[in-house]
Amino acid sequence: MTTDTIRIRGFQHDFARRQATRVVEFPGGFAVHNDDYPDSYEHNRAVVTGTGRELEDPQALLGIVEEVFTEAGHRHRQVLVEDDALGEHLAPAFVAAGYEHGREVVLRRAPGGGEAAVGVPVEEALDRRDLDLLVFRDWRATLPPEVPDDVVWQLAHRRSARLRGADEVAFLVVRAEGGVRAYVDLYRTGWVAQIEDLLTEPGFGRRGYAGALIAEALRRAGAAGAELVFIVADVDDWPHGWYARLGFTEALRQHSFTRSP
Image (cartoon, rainbow, N blue to C red):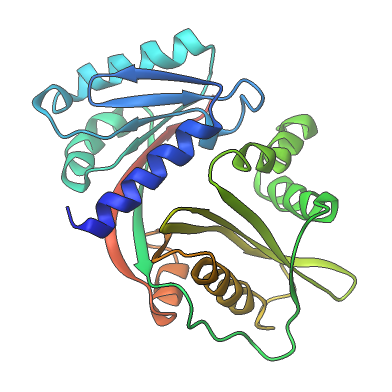
């Protein structure tokens, strides 16, 4: 691993652990649990960090995951496998066990240098009520109708846990045309920063909002002393190419395995 990839992995581990109310260690990885947001897969997942021989037996790892999540009382299962080759090796067994397999790419670039669209106002959401409402609407439109509203609100409010994840956390928004129309998160600890959760409200695209948010996040990261900025994207989704045009290059690949109740 390069210096950049070591820094990125260290940041990700620290970010996950700092948000957790409980951490369970297991051979080759750890699991985080957050009792305040039990329906947030992001806050209740297993992370496979190693590549050792004990992890190459898919059935053994599936057994570990089942034990960890059952003891925690979760109905869902989510596993992040950091090593690309190990993730591909485990995929057939996890899919056969009912998991959905996702491939993710971690992209990096230096901070600063972003060019925002002229006239697009970006501000920090110190009062998150409008932001939470937009996030709620987005999740409500995405999730099946049988998912109750209290679970959807939990997903909208889980940003409060992210405040513990890094030394500096900022929720940036574009407030225009009568409300919050786009947002992105910025997390920084030391020399590393992460940009995450970028969204533009449907019907308000192609106004430069997303580009303005990324540019402001890059500027803030550099001003705060970060030397490296990264973002996680789905390998096959269109933002992967869009981030590349903004100067992000591939650093790592990882795999997610998810089984919903």
